[in-house]
Image 1 (cartoon, helix red, strand yellow):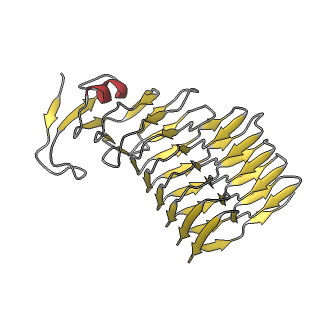
Image 2: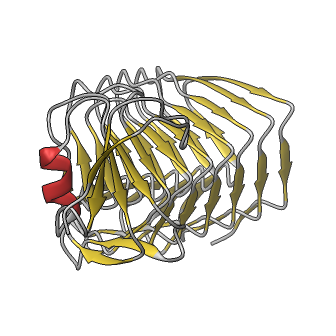
Image 3: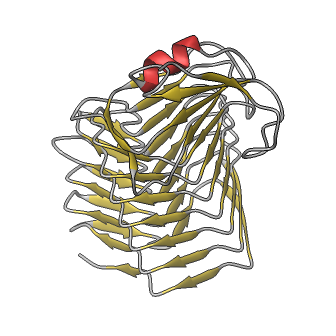
Length: 284
């Protein structure tokens, strides 16, 4: 039976719009999103969905798991990105409650953001950047994007392979972008095998202005390649980052020649305030 309901009560803060059920209303997440209008919610039942999601060019659509990231999985099946957000979407566009895994591409294997959506309470894990130049295996924030990335687990994503450059195993923050990154667990992400390995946890590119607070950034590694910079967070020249009230711990640069700033490495400008930065190690 096909169900498209009208929401009259509060559900995840929704007070209006239709609810489109996957797989009851539409068999795939992509087909449900394609049918959605601004203000609608696509509600996905537990299961594993082997898809690469391309968000429609309409702002204000919400994609929610009906259960939890443990039981509702979007698997890119070795292709990627798993989820792509176009330019023009704002924080009225939401992704909430999924495991995002199995993406593989050189930019944003897990989530590729050209726009500025709200990404809440997901597990973004096991995605791989495997090209000549790899950026943001977990999440890639493109030029001038400003997503809200809040309450997620960003785990075991890696930029590796034969790459010359690896930037942002967990999150890559592109030029002139201004994301808000809050209350996430960013753990065990890697940049490896490249000549330059920067920001295994988070990399902030030129002229970016990120707001990074309340996160646990732990156990991320730059290793194997020649140079390791900022295993926890790397802030590039001309970037202006606000970094406060984070736990930045147990991150490691393990490259054989040059290792700088295992916890935080700043080449640009950063306000680093009231963080706990402990047990970060450079070795090679």
